[in-house]
Amino acid sequence: MTVEYTERGMLKYSEKLLERFRNPKNIGEMENPTVVAEEGDPQCGDMFRMFLKIENNRIVDAKFLSFGCAANIATGDVTVDLIKGKTVAEAEKLQIKEIAEALGGLPAIKMHCAVLSYKTLKKALAEYHKSSTVSQG
Image 1 (cartoon, one colour):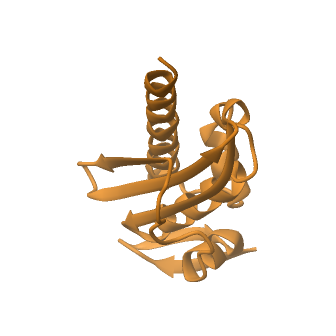
Image 2 (cartoon, helix red, strand yellow; image 1 turned 60 degrees about the vertical axis):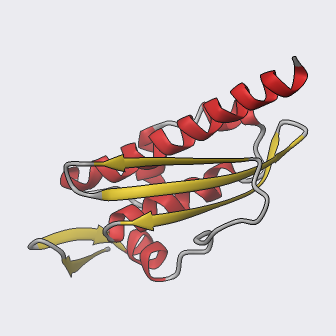
């Protein structure tokens, strides 16, 4: 079932997306993260900051901060849920469409939110690889 929500006109957001927007479980800063990454979309002004705690190549905790719309908050929250407990290699396989599908779909005009969340995750994982290579070197 879709619910109408006003944001730059009427958009059809799924119940799953609205629930994530209203009650994000993974929002906030993290003390002593292994890695922090930030990405932004200059066209719409949305921003993400993602915090990952990685132990033995496994994401044991993750949080995010969002500056953006309902879809931006929801995609950040669901992305974090999709990677928590996964190995770094498993998290690297996450696809943009999986993020959108986990929310029951996204309006086409809001797919950039899933892309932004995905890009922030990829940046965080790249930073992790870079820092773990330096510490092993």
